Image (cartoon, rainbow, N blue to C red; front, side, top):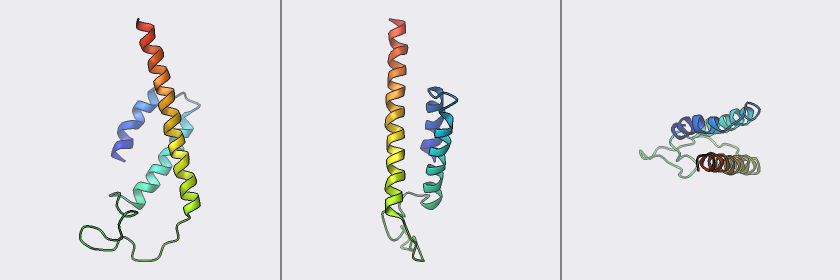
Length: 96
């Protein structure tokens, strides 16, 4: 969440009002991951540093859905990266 909270204002500078709904959707995904895995290790390791189980009970995880959502996140960041690069390129060309 720390990275997202720093990154979102930068992305907003290059995002139109119509596109803001996509940022809100992305934030929902990031918040859900954050709430489920605050320290970023619950998906990678069965126990934490104090050797306590991350998941005491069996949890169903829809891997196909997870893959689809992660692909959406990846695609969003790829598109926004291209979008920002193009806008910054236009801005720098304007000054020369």
